[in-house]
Length: 501
View 1 (tube, rainbow, N blue to C red):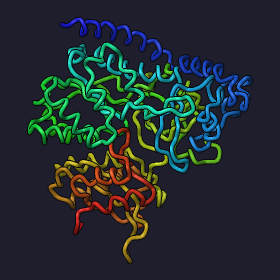
View 2: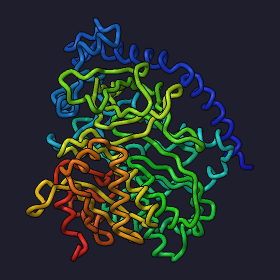
View 3: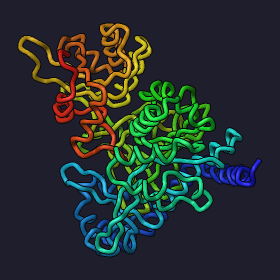
View 4: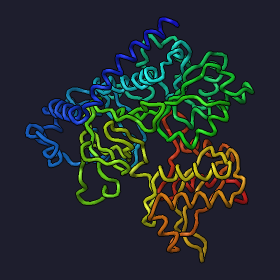
């Protein structure tokens, strides 16, 4: 056993003990974070505008700080971007994470010294937790790859600017620098396809043990590796044992990954965002991710089915229930206050508080009052693929409100198949029934003949990648929107459908 392996196990044990302390005292931990955040924000412009000096309890916070999304917080963020100090958090942020916006165009998410430390700590602890639980640390001596955006940063009014994954690349610890792949020069390549090809050349003869990234882009890397070497990934990298991912649900990709790899590998799910690192999978034996309660983030939750009410109830950890979808509201040590992240989560356990990401509050279909969310379509897809031995590379769903004359409206599923179903009619039937079982509103609309059974538009091989490239979102942290309440994505994908569909 190498010295690095022994050291990793000792460190993992120490971190596990620290984790147990706050996991065992969740409410007290969150109350401490709340008080620390309010104290730090007291003399900022935001703190003065919202009378932080009078905030003592969560009810005070609710009364004085309304829920806001990025667009509603933008006036404050704009001042920070212009170089003003003490606006949302003391001083200036270290970075802006630039992300794609909606109505506001580009979004500039502040990252402070405190928040980047928590991001790095959470990434590290997720791996150390795996080592502590499994007792396996031999992979730390092999090569590790993190498929990410370019680490090249620009500057805006004295603050460094880049994508979160590129910023994170500057924080790889020294003891992993020799293990890290690809080279810095390759990581700086902006064009995603050129970058992946270069990564294939750099890594195909290495002893890769850990591979991390958004599943859709790692899949592209695996496909190019297999095409280049004509080997299964698991044979090419004999010691590859751990896949780390975040950003999207892995389950729709799992079957394809196991086919490309040629065997099963362990995986760790992460829940990071530019706004903070919220959770990681802490058990190989149980589903869900441990919500990080000591990471400089104070959490509130609003039931997703009540979110658009005039005054939805804001809950804390002590009020949440298992199996309910909540919009997650965060206040952070980067100066985001009662911020609507846009993600919906579902608790699968309390004490410890473990979650799954169920979708986006802006990404749903409710054109007919059904309010279908990402988790439901992903679970329906799993049922249908298992029933018909199908394999799916990628998919998205949109409502068809204006069907042909004398037809009822329906949900249109745009699917790129890796392997076609053994029986397409059964596939459609299983898909539709699985969605009905999960969503009573959708069931009522089908039974009441407001909607007809879903329809499938088959997308050609590589069509989703071509679509993402056509909108300038190939690679990096970009991911396909799983479902939407309009036809924007659907219309874009229609160019790549299989003819005579």
